[in-house]
Length: 176
Image 1 (tube, one colour):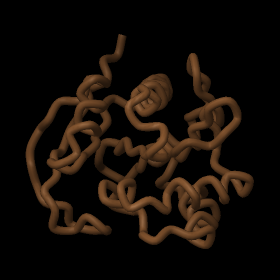
Image 2 (image 1 turned 90 degrees about the vertical axis):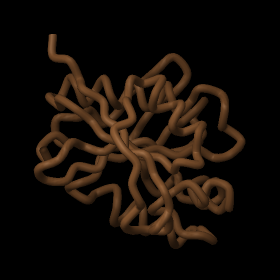
Image 3 (image 1 turned 30 degrees about the vertical axis):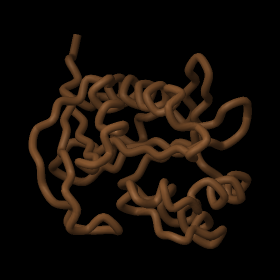
Image 4 (image 1 turned 90 degrees about the horizontal axis):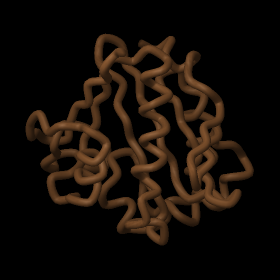
């Protein structure tokens, strides 16, 4: 499934957004938007406080990782968040995303994730998984709008949310 990364496009466009590979020009905005306790509270892989050094680590280590396909979400050329897939062997790719708080409740997460889902389907993925904190109803609602179904509760086993209750979700991508 890791080969899926190489079948995904480098750029996706939606009605309002352009999704591109995150790069060094995004570092200041990544750091500014991710250095927010409300964003941090719902993310399993986002340290807090979040600095430009953390953003550089993301650009230099996470983005090129063979198991990651990351897209910077841009609105009118300005970075507003990240959406992407984590691809581990023997399991469905996992959809993840985050937006700067000023961009919440505007439909951007749904729009960006919908574009990534369509690209994953086109590239050959047959299903995706995701997860959200039980307490994060807005994110669970985004995933439901995208067609994900809740498949079970559990406890986060790693990252900054370790020990917290999460909902596992799955999306079957119909092949036509």
